[in-house]
Image (spheres, rainbow, N blue to C red):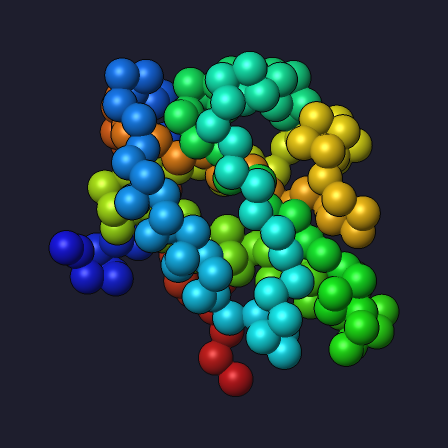
Length: 173
């Protein structure tokens, strides 16, 4: 297995997936366990994860995500939703508006890195119609979709994209 630094360096957004290879249940379970292990405000885990494997439902999510067709190709889509009221019970408005959002995004990040460590590709999708996702997945009250994460075996490995130099994004004080 790769170490953490190699995992991060080799993670790229994959938009072409092998349609002949399913994600093994044990790998999916491990990814979900890692998402669940992510830190969260007050250890409340103010989020919910929907695992979408049904082909018809994956196709319907393409429409909700501005026509991003690769969503239908990926054998698994994880939908991370924040649960604002869960965080608000302990932290009030800041929990509702920020901590629940952070909890969901941290869990999604852990899942994405776990997928890379398991030899899978993924792409974080943030462009989608919240109301359409909520309706199509019949999300429960208080859940707000925050991120879609496609997961599967890559059909191609994209070239690394350029990154800004550390001096542009880091300040030492």
